[in-house]
Picture (cartoon, rainbow, N blue to C red):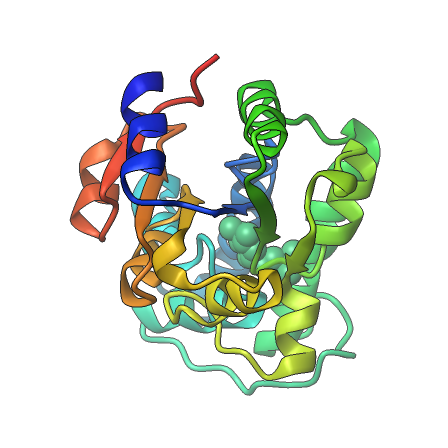
Length: 248
Ligand SMILES: O=P(O)(O)OC[C@H]1O[C@@H](O)[C@H](O)[C@@H](O)[C@@H]1O
């Protein structure tokens, strides 16, 4: 596998590597997934009682991957509720966590996510970090992208922010008015800031919306990073190649 990825980088004249954060660099994808599940399941149970209905709990392998993973916070709330035929008022980012608005529910999920990160800290994927350092040593440029507004804090907590020349995250996306994945905007902005073209850049993504974005953006190489043993879905959504871990 090592040969094939590094061979592809050479063959395609890759100058820059653009990494997604959660699930590719840090082991925070499952912290996000469980925080989302806790929030949605509680909300839909309570709402179901009010309506005399039963809503199916969120399935991480299907619902979460399709509607929420890799997508900006409030888009994730809206998408998943729409799949259950629920439309809520948007509210405002300052809404109290738990208020029955898109923002209120998103903020509640965020408080669950941050609580776990505070208690347990952030684990990195050592395979990613070691491989990335090796590539930097060879002169490749590196950027990190994320839908998450917690990206900077997560990188700092893991002590790895210095490994990336450029960061385009959920906060930067709002400042610059960039669309969230599956639109390719955050990847294109990272390439622009690195002063490389998409066709000279490889992207590394674990989310379906992320590989779709890479494909749409015309990147030279879209690598799906499969931490959950589901390579087919990543290939179907636009990954050129799928790896389970980075080569040592
Ligand atoms: O709510 P945040 O931290 O800004 O993150 C937005 C999204 O960021 C993505 O990286 C996660 O896959 C999603 O689960 C999350 O919802």
